[in-house]
Length: 316
Ligand code: AKB
Image (cartoon, rainbow, N blue to C red; front, side, top):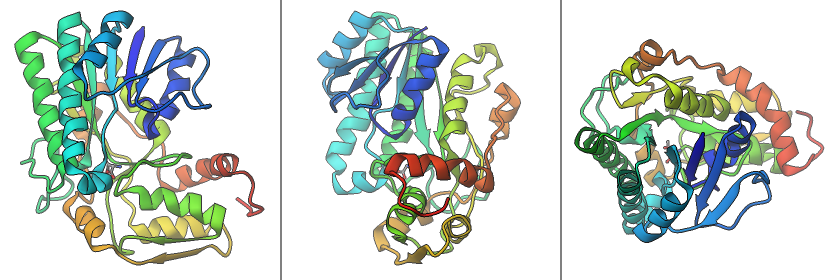
C-alpha cells in the first residue's frame, strides 16, 4: 500500500512512520520540517507546505498514493496565538489534500479530527452526533474539515473517513496542544523532577495512549466501507482528571513535584471540551477497542520516556 502522510514530523507521524514501514507500506512523508533522525531510512521525506496547493499536487501526482493520512494541523493552544495561520494550515491544507485526492484519483483520505470539535454544554459522555459548536480556531477548522471531507465523498466519491482523537500521550515532544500538560507531567517529571500544570487538578478530558491511537487509525482505514455507518468516529480510552494523572506519575517517580497553576486561556479551552466520549459506534461498526488505561499506559511509557530523554537517574 502506498501511503502519503502529511504532517509526518509531528507527534503522531513520528510514531506512525516505523509502524507503516513494518507493515510493508511504501510511505511518502510530507512536512514543512526537515527530515528528522527518527525517520526510518525506507521512508522518502518530502519537504513541502500543505498550504500551497501546487506543492501538495506535485507530491500526490508524483507518488500516486493509495491513501493519504492527513495529520498536518496547528493544534489548539498554538492556534489561539496564530489563528490566521491555523486557518490556513487546517482549512486550506485540508482542502488542498482533498482536491489533490480528487484530481489524481486517490482512493482514501483519512482525516484526524479531535475532541476539540466539540464545544461546551454537552451531555456526558459525548456521542458522535451532537451539535458541534467549538470555541477554538483549531476546533472550528476541524469541524469544517470533517464537513468538507464528507462533501468530497458524496460529490466526488472519495472514500473519506477518520477519527476524533482524544488528547494523545506518547514518549515524544508534543506540538502545541492544550492536552499537553499530561505528557509534560511524565516527561518533565522524569527529566526535571517537577512540572507545573497549566490546568486545575480537576481538569478532565479524554486521553489515549499513542499505540492505541495509531492502531485505531490503521484499523479504521482498513475497515470494509460497507461496515461504516458514518465517516467520522469518536474513539475513547480513558478520562482521568489531571490529579489522577499526577498520582500515576508520582507512583512511578518518587519525589517528583507536580503542582497546578491554571492558565485562564488554556483552562477555558479544557472546560469547553468533553469530559468523556461515547465511542459505541466505532466499537460496533469496525470493532474498535482500546488496550491501554491510565495504569497500563503509565507502565509502558516510563521506560520509553527514559530512553527519549536519557536516563536522569530517576527510577522508573
Ligand atoms: C490539542 O490539545 O489541541 C490536541 C487535541 C486534543 O486535539 N492534542
